[in-house]
Length: 96
Image (cartoon, rainbow, N blue to C red; front, side, top):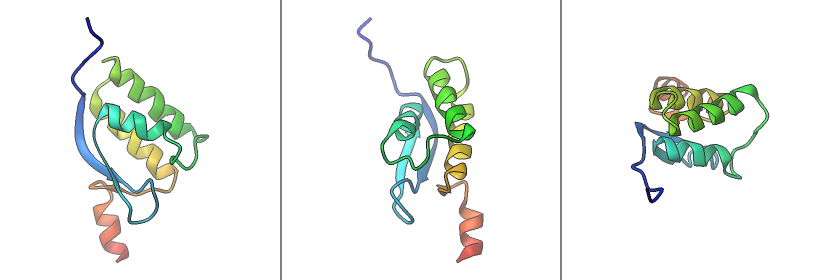
C-alpha cells in the first residue's frame, strides 16, 4: 500500500476562520482536520475543539461517520465564534 487514499467527503461547508466575511471551504474530512490544526483556528482550548479534533481523526480511521466529524466541526466553529455556511444561513439572514 502506498499510503494514498481517496478523501472522505462531507456535505460542503464554508467557515469564516480568517475573519468575518472571509470564508474557507471544506468538502472532506481531511479539510476539516487541517482547519482544526491550522494556526488560524482562534481558540484550541474549548471541549468542542478537542471533540472535533478527535472525531475528525476517528473519521479518517473510519471509526465514526464523516457526518459525525462534520457536526463536531460545526460545533467547534460555533464555540470559537465562527459562522458556518450553509448551516448558519438562517441566522445570518436574520442579522442582516
